[in-house]
Structures are given as C-alpha cells and as structure tokens.
Image (cartoon, rainbow, N blue to C red):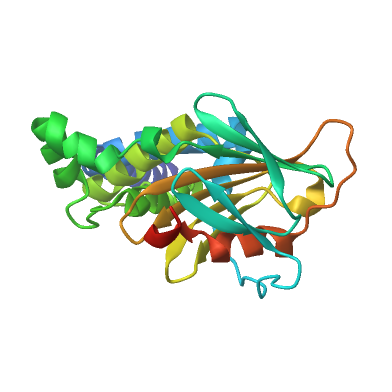
Length: 255
C-alpha cells in the first residue's frame, strides 16, 4: 500500500513538473522577447533612476505684466520678469544677462534638430521602419516624439505586453536614456495654446531650469535659466511661467 501511494505521489509530481515545463515553454515562445525587454528595463531603471520620471502637467501662473519687459532673441521675443538684459553671443546660443543676477542661455532655433523632418527626407527606409514600429501610436511631429520619449518609464514594460508594444516602449526608453534630462530634479509639461513643451528642473531647488518649447509650426526652442556665478538672485516658478506664456515670434512690423 505504501509503495502504491508513493507511486501515485511520484506520478502526480511528474505531471505537475510536465505542466510547469509546458507553461514555461509557452511563456518563452510567446513572451520570451517581452520578458528580456522587461528585465533590461528594470536594470536600466535601477541604474538610472531618473528614467522613472514622467512629465507632470503644469498649471501656469498668470504672467507678470507690471514689471516685465520684452526681450528680443533672434526672431523671437518673450517677457523678462527681471528687466532689460545685456547680450553675449556664444556661438550656438545667445546668453542674456539680467542685472539682478539671472541669466538665460537661448539656443539658436536654426540649429535645433528637426528629427522627424530629417528622417523623412534623408532616410525614407529608416523612417518607414520607425513608422511601422509606432503604427498603433503614430508620431507625426517633433513634439509628439519628445512627449512619447519623456512619458515612457521602465514600469510600463511587463512580460505580458504584445511584442509590438514591448518593442515600441523599449525603443522609446533607449531614446530617453540617450536624450537624458536637460536639468533636474523634476519634469513637467505645459500647453499654452500657442506653445507646448517641457520644463526640466524646479527653480525652488536652486538648480538651473531648462525649457524645450515647440510652437504651432513644430519648431523647437531651448532655454536654460540660471543664476550667474556667485549670485543669490531669485528665480521663481512664476518667472518661468511668464517666459513660457509670452514667448512668440517678433511681429514683422518690429523686426
């Protein structure tokens, strides 16, 4: 009787092992790629914690109109919360120094990469591969591309995704790793109607604040807002909001 029970228990264990082996084989066949991508994403998230940050929508404060002055940069303008500025051309960017101790590096819009346009015109085959990868979530503008990249995080990858979704999110995560953050901590998004984009960093932290802004024609603009060396000048979120909301092309009559 004891031998019979042992045989039954052994048979039951063998059946369970076979079932588990089949399940593992099915998972490897159907979700092996997704599992590898998921494992890599977890590793990247641990070694680069900022990859877990995604944009938080901003509610912009009312612009400061009492003391703000228009500042012209290249063919564009915005309201300065700190009065007039002196300019210093540094090649790829124009440095604006404000008397209280704030400074803005405004990068030449002409050298900002039109990623989508360049891909379409210079490498149609690569663009077609890109379009196929994102067929279910089309990316048609540079803003859409940056939004998709900065909105991805390792936690969005799981072994149970479809292979298409896993490959799409993996591509975005690798892009995000390559792009890095212009400043930190903190990642925010905004949309004023005439411009939209991202703010990197929080002025309350005392560190630089960077802006990537896209206008209604999908042109990209980059700012970095800092305190000059040795200065204790104040930079508030309302100051940054004033710059974001007032940014526009210089009217033709004033050029």
